[in-house]
Image (tube, rainbow, N blue to C red; front, side, top):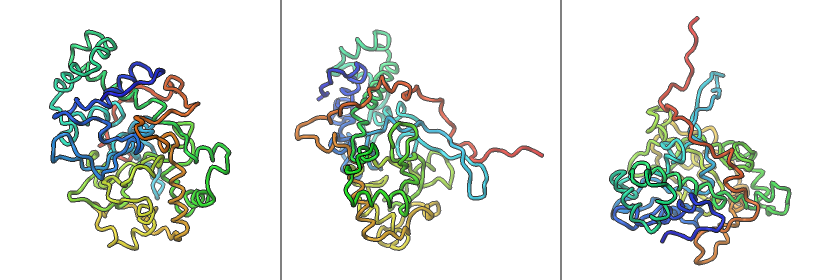
Length: 380
């Protein structure tokens, strides 16, 4: 099953769609990108963690939504100031919840070779499967003879095709009720949702990390793409998150702040799928520090953020209203998918990839995530 391309879909993106759907690219066969990123779930997975191609193996984290993932900025350092007014650098952006892929080009290739995902041995294994695929003739014509014969170059073309597919309008429709509301339609949100938005921006302090303003895109992405340890319930083994990549103790247990777009469709929640419902997530943010036994121990208590969550003092009504608001972040194009519909329809007016060419740039040079977080002071 390789998918049906749209008539106006660019050839490279069309190829990416077929690769995304191709269950012959794993070892053993049977798993594709779409196996863990279901369109009806906003391209997330309803399972806490996803099983791999090899029976009995599974990932250690909840598969995040691919909606808007092409708009996540590349991993980079941002300068900020600590409580004492000292300059420091923090990491923002990057793909996977721990930032181990600095951009989406790196991200799309990793699942192919992860033993707990598609389990391919090396470049030759993936290239060999691409050459035997149903779309092999199309791909050969598109990439040319030289790249077709070279394993590494052929695989790079597959990765680029996947990235181009994920940049297509289908993954960034911005057609949720909240978008209508921000565009001026005050009736787009219910009274409860409007109250929830007020809590979101004030006493709940949600918008501190889930930004409602415009930054890297003309629409709000509902994330600052920074990293934090919110004290999520731990699993059977400790997950170091960002700290596992940087080697810094104060970043252990930190994970990238997700976008809240389509969050009502992407249960279960948190990096390990440890919380099942949105209501419980909001209750966790509200009372985590007051009801510690309710959620159990977290992996790295020494780095947990207690300033912005854990005792928000929200009333039951405010929690209800925040839960209602989460539905307002759901894209209609995903919510209204009919039975048997393969992918969401693209709403009218969504800019094409070509119209957003200036945004979709080539990957930036890799950053050294182990660099010191504070600049060296000049010698007197």
